[in-house]
Length: 65
Image 1 (cartoon, helix red, strand yellow):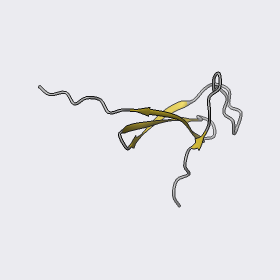
Image 2 (cartoon, one colour):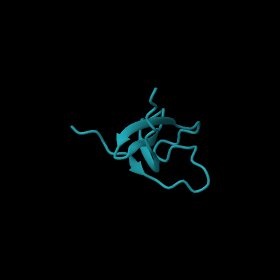
Image 3 (tube, rainbow, N blue to C red):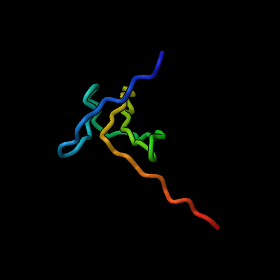
């Protein structure tokens, strides 16, 4: 079975409570390789649901000696 895709959500003012289970103490942060860098997702520590808020991180410049 393929893993579930993160649910896309919009952060209006703040996002602290899990929309699925109601957990009220914030989220964990998860990173996944994506075209052009990394995608960051929020993960509920109680129910494990993942949320995509559209945060993308470009790759860091390669450091050369």
